[in-house]
Length: 85
Image (tube, rainbow, N blue to C red; front, top):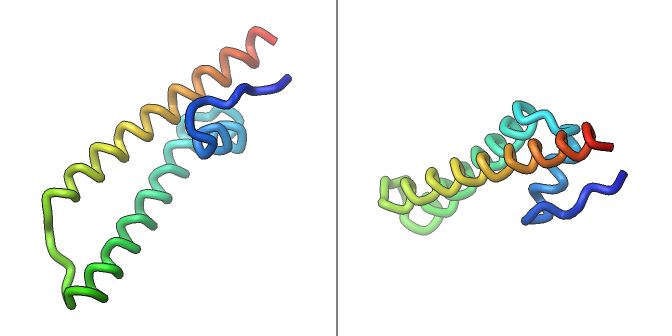
């Protein structure tokens, strides 16, 4: 069975790797978000000397939540394709 590309290729890769399990896919996306926050902190400390709070943190969190939802929808499509054969 071939799984069609579901949106972003990263989402398709995570869905295939997690075998359609939304919990595993959500944990994977959470790790990617944690690494993104860590790199963001390193860049802020490098250029400004300290980490600071800004309004973009809220935007990044909303994008993260949407991305988790998008990945879980991909898991639902993947599982539905497996059931139908």
